[in-house]
Amino acid sequence: MHMADALLAPAVAATMYAASAVTVGASVKTLKKDEATAKLPTMAVTSALVFAGQMINYTIPGTGSSGHLCGGMLLSALLGPQAGFLSMVVILTIQCLFFADGGLLALGANCWNMAFYGCFVGYYLLWRPIIKGKLFSGMSEKAAMRGKIVLASILGCVITLQLGAFSVVLETSISGITDLPFGAFVGLMQPIHLAIGLVEGLVTSAVLLFVYEARPELMMDVTASGSEGKCSLKTTLVILAVIAAIVGGCLSLFASSNPDGLEWSLFGNADAGYSQNMGLDEEDYGVQSGAADTAAAIQEKTAFLPDYAFSNSDSAAGTTVSGLVGSVMVAGLAALICMIGGFFRKKKAAKSV
Image (cartoon, rainbow, N blue to C red):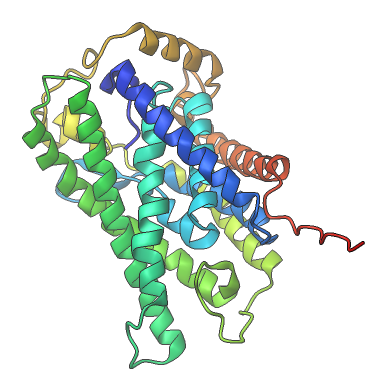
């Protein structure tokens, strides 16, 4: 769902930057008061895991398309919506600047579409009400919690991905790309992202069920019922870090080469018989602007592994290096932001006079 700069008029791009910036500011203000020290290493590791997970495009059968995880629901379930949103901003910024994944002019829109809905809408309207609700009351407490985690994960990913996909359509339409009839674009984007959301929901629930068994107190709104879980915090995070390394460094080699849901909707997939779709020319489409040209020039200079590969090389090693290096960069930047911002620190009690 990473948008390219050509899909946005500069005014629309600026509006989405402003919306995302306001959300970042509000999140920072909240996180300065958060004293949950375990969240700092958790934020670093899970951000790396989501970065690695986004490198794997999985085929959507019967469509000629593919999809990848967004990760907002996963991060908000473990970190809360504010830290989850900042984690997604870190991931999307590094993808944009160093791997040329998503446009620089479109970064604000990508943060909104892929992070805001999953982190804030998904958490406040779906995760928290379901986890704290009375569903599955006839089952044992642990079984009921497992059921609620699966339900919240799947519903959250499906609904928030639908919202994100619809936002892409709105932003593109408002930008004045007249080659894209609104109804037809919606008709392509929503069903394909429904399928993508279902897969993400299953993956998200699997990861969260592991965390629930290993270290339930890491999860937002989940009661541990006196049990500390089967693993220490360190062991749990090491396991997640190893998974991130395997996914980013190895499994990413087997990612689908089919276009993702947005690209498929715009350009089709001639090899799979979907050459029409919206019928845009992949080499010449969308909004042409000086701002987009400037953004592209910046990306060309900063992206040292464009498209997660070595420049002018088809070597698979480029993908492996991208997965490992990107995961480390994301984890490091997330941790650095926490330390600089003073997040997740125990506040010193005021001394009485």
